[in-house]
Image (cartoon, rainbow over all chains, first blue to last red):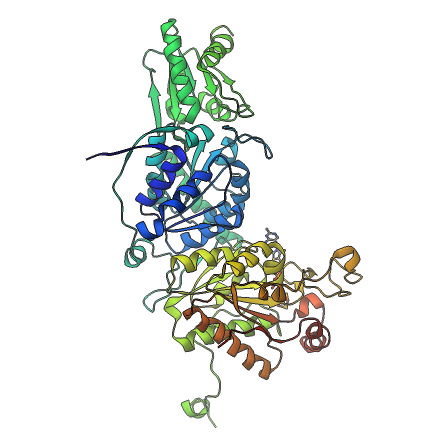
Length: 360
Length: 255
Ligand SMILES: Cc1ncc(C[n+]2csc(CCOP(=O)(O)OP(=O)(O)O)c2C)c(N)n1
Ligand code: SF4
């Protein structure tokens, strides 16, 4: 029997974490994602699965708790919103450097600075281009519904352990706050100590006589060794680009124009497509699901067939840079977006298409 | 006498604990870091808890502690060791967990993590090396640098009006309900080393009781940062550091 529930995106993250068999969640309140920690505390996951949930003293502490837990091979995560994610950047860079799995959820709000508590997509650069220091990448998943938000929690843990790399879910205040029907998965048991030792021989589980000590570090003062390490990370990122690209195509077969949009913006674009097609405008949508690795190929391919592309993002134009790189000048690419927490309407998106692409 | 005649079990008065790796210590000759490493490793060996111990190394001269300690370890970002240890211990309550931090790490950049881990009453051991200076980065002023003490960023001596006062973090955290055992030790003489080892042993044993943080400060030297010979440094430490940071237990559990 399917278990269906009406849930907020933020609640879905929390419930998904418990059911994915997460060992630990460490967070700090910030709007619009505080429901993640609130829901977890109310659920008493310590009784449900033995999961540790702790309100940390700051986002800095929270991400470093994730670092500590991940070092022991545990399934651990944190969530926050934009200003808090900025504080986590040092820890995320350390995790990538030390090759630690872990999940970071950003329920994005408008910035820069304290900005606004209203939704935004202005952390695309931060999520996909570094944010923290050094040569590193995160796998970045962008859900467009509460169901996807739920599903991506387990997927993120799977990918994080597959690659020994942090994974970010980049969502926003709309999806975090809106309620939708969610089909819940079965409870996955938390890994036992024996399972962790077997699956994560690198983890600090306590040195036994049958193995070398485990050391979790991102430091190597020997430049040759450090370069070797960074090249190894690079090879891992290449493999992600090869194997982990996820995207959705909607109404693309006969399309003359294409929207490229992720998350909430993609939902808005779907409505714009409906209205546009009723008016005879053949428009489709490519929705990147992984923002890194970015779906370069499908965008490059469709650029050969269409007359123009409009990226729709709730920011000043960030993902457009990746779309333009993929399109490589083959066709016109423009951006439409709102900022400051304003959500564009499907109608204004369509007008932007007409003005910037069709008429432009 | 031949070498073989000397190396006999009955003649052994001291041995290097096998928990030291064979890597030569990178610390300056005479530095207290190496001695404290030894005391921690001997404690782990004597308690028979190698397979249950997880250490957290700082950023500072001890950043490479994991190269010398043959136990599972992780290396934290500057100041964050107590946050790591919080998660490690909560997720592995049967393990013995310790942080090893310098004064810059524990009492400047990591003050927030230190105070909150102590205040929550996390059940791990904190080893705090207070040498009054930033050793690793070349002798800059630390939160613990004494008034009037010279460093590369207080070249005319610490002017407390301009640079602020030294922070007695150990006295501060002793006030918190989450600390169980707080002590200040040194390793400059054999007697001090023996006392310090007892304190470290107690700080590890306490984890079995689940009563909160056990905190061992070691007032130590930094001959390189202080620009002194090891002998001069120890003398200077006794004359200047100990009056400001008096040795002894600061908070002892009521039996
Ligand atoms: C975020 C960050 N800021 C600054 C540094 C540079 N840094 C490395 S060690 C250190 C100070 C270490 O001093 P202390 O903690 O007293 O340890 P010691 O070297 O004296 O043992 C500093 C500032 C760093 N690595 N990371
Ligand atoms: S710089 Fe100072 S603290 Fe660092 S190893 Fe040398 S003497 Fe010790």
